[in-house]
Amino acid sequence: MTFYYSTSSWNSQPQISEDRINLWKHIADKKNWRITQLPNGFYQTEYQDLEKEDMWHDVTRRETLEGAESAIDASIAHYAKKLEYIKGPKVVKTFE
Image 1 (cartoon, rainbow, N blue to C red):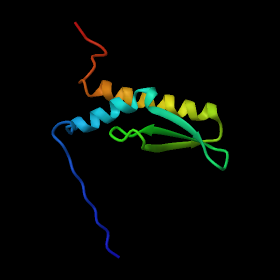
Image 2: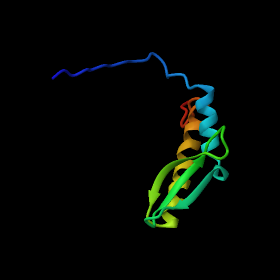
Image 3: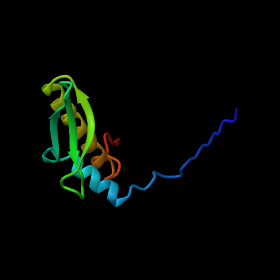
């Protein structure tokens, strides 16, 4: 049996593409989300495709409607943090 092992390193942060940033902005907006109920009774969270308005991408499945909406809110918060991060380092403390 052969295993392939690879490592990589950076001298600086990897550059994030403009397409990726636009996707994060799209996902961070709650109006681009919906919840559908599946035949098994579970609720599925989906976000609308950036280019095709009639296409939706499934993200999570939850047992309750409240759980599904909570999952959407958590995803929005996650991508909002990513967008804040790409603005650069945030100063949290200075010294005199």
